[in-house]
Length: 289
Image (cartoon, rainbow, N blue to C red; front, side, top):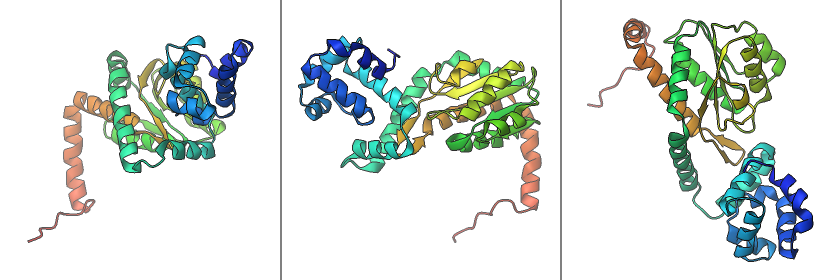
């Protein structure tokens, strides 16, 4: 169920019982905290039973409490300020070991990504990139490192790779103005979605360029303007966005492209090895003996 839960609560307010009104009020006023509570904890916080919470979710039209909780969490990802994210993270962590919690969360997101990534979309993206005359990689704000990482490796395989990590819409348009029907645009955006990246992808699609989106949802602001969508789960860890799973998808993309360009890369790297050796690009291994 993808409807805004706050709007749903407002529409059904007149039908709520006393306990349900308490739940509705708490969710409306503190949705950032409620989204990460179990049904039991939410009930205790509000002063109703766990079963009341579960029934409330069903009466709102959700399959159960987990379904309602997901709706709250989806909403939270798009609405929270950076400071609110810190507060939510502190609530989630509590007395848990931070390292264990964050690593386990990343493992979960990797597993979810492996299941949700459409292999046909992935192969179509690889084919489109292989045929692109110019390749634009769009990724502003927190995903800029992902754009740079992808661009670093694509530069070994393609002659015209443009990495665009600007945060302003006007700068974005200046950077992608040359995109055309023979070109490919790889846009990366996760909550809170960068408006500049979304607008850049939208513009490039009007020029006839093939747009590949790496995002968390087909209905995300970016997903609506793409020819091919690569889905990956991200997570909110304090004010930091955990992008472990999106990076894994980028790794897979690089490996797939490299496999198709094996002979060309062999020649390129043989040449580079001689250059790196001559100019001492890398530190030589020191024998400890």
